[in-house]
Amino acid sequence: QVQLQESGPGLVKPSETLSLTCTVSGGSISSTYWSWIRQPAGKGLEWIGRIYISGSTDYSPALKSRVTMSVDTSKNQFSLKLSSVTAADTAIYYCARVNVHNWFDPWGQGTLVTVSS
Amino acid sequence: EIVMTQSPATLSVSPGERATLSCRASQSVSSNLAWYQQKPGQAPRLIIYGASTRATGIPARFGGSGSGTEFTLTISSLQSEDFAVYYCQQYNNWPPITFGQGTRLEIK
Image (cartoon, rainbow over all chains, first blue to last red; front, side, top):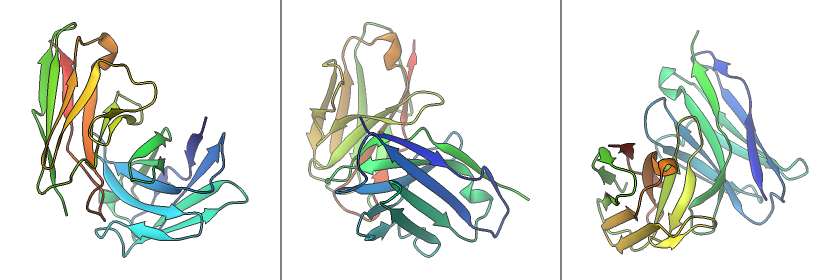
């Protein structure tokens, strides 16, 4: 079965760029969309965006100006970059597979990213 | 942006009893609604999609209903492992895909 694992720095300085990678195992990254979703501590879920293997992307309007997603099919990975971060970007970041109708299953375990100097 | 509102924020129910969780959309999302369960320290897990279809491996005690703007997640005969936070998510009008703020289901 498909499993996802997020990786990347757990601490990012304000104004810098947050960079995370999601590695897909147990299946191919091809033929579907993949998403990033975040969750501030004790709060709800926020969809960041999704990417297809072709590189086609859709982003949340609230974050669109700061988000870049990319995919590396040779490594079965996709990535997230979020620029100009502030403390408000501190959250657990999840990667997830997107069903063709845009629900999410499965999810990675999540990785905590803290924005602090 | 479609706003999803869940109620109540916290629901206290005894094991073995029935729990009913509500989700309301600010405009119609047809049947394009999913429910997730999240336990402490874990990622969300898909339990319902298409408003009423159980995901793979989800027990039959979980049931989803509704369409348009009003949705319900019902858990009959609560088991200890069912106490968690539940989120609804719409995928009808996007971007953005949006989630409700969650309902915490706790043991009474």
